[in-house]
Length: 384
Image 1 (cartoon, rainbow, N blue to C red):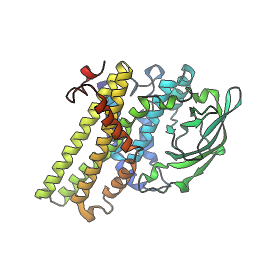
Image 2: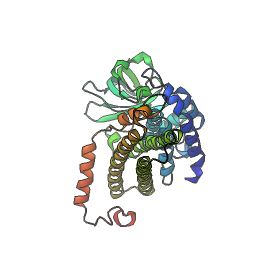
Image 3: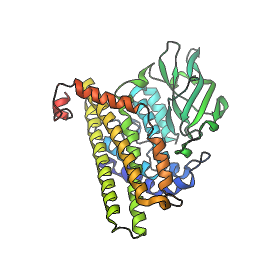
Image 4: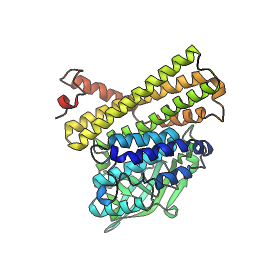
């Protein structure tokens, strides 16, 4: 992690500076462009490119996981929208490193260094995407994706599409407006407004063979698919940290630091944030352990721990929001204070898919395990 300390410091500075722009761009038609520029100039967009192609191996090799999660937390602390955008870009880089061939890695690494913003667009409704072969080496992409975060700014999204055989294929799509229909009216959210998570419809979009990433079904390969939840949970935790800092600043400015009930609430918030960071550290350790020697048992353990972490972080964030609102009251939920916007953004971002199924998976794993609760998460005893 120490070798990545410059990136961590940059993310902290950018996160702190992005808070004001987050308020200024809190609209569906906006986007935090200045923060994106800072992220590009800080080399965070190329950090998750493999070292052999000029990157820093962030999130690709053992020993880099805590740095990755800390960077995402720092960006999310200042602006959840940019935290989500950066997480999507890093997710794409990890998928390219995992499933791309040598030629693709060279191409997409070079594009990242050119400043191209990547992302992953997977969510869809009944009118979802499908891929058909046009001729040898070329494909057509048709259909729609929803929650296409970063529309107009993400120019290299990884789009999943159904093939003729029913499998799901990843495509790194060279994005241009000529072959898509953008529906901004679809996006009318409570929070995360400037994430521009619009509906995108592809209309006979040509996809060259070199942009076909991996083979059908690999996007859902475990533990990468489920394990990626540690990244968005880290971004969410950053917002909870910001709420604690903003609440402290608010109470100090009103000279309410001696109120016993405010002290009690602040103590509860501090414990919650520390608990969240312990979960983040634990996830980083297990991610590193898996990356050092990938095995099915290590992967299964990492998935379950990820499910525990994302569930715990969600509840931590909910509790922090509730305590924050009690601390600041109706007055604090007015502008120019940041509380109202952060709470809207965080409430929206917390709504990740299948929370109940995730919790059931954790319980099922515990019930099926033949070792005690004391040892179940021990890296040495449980993971061979």
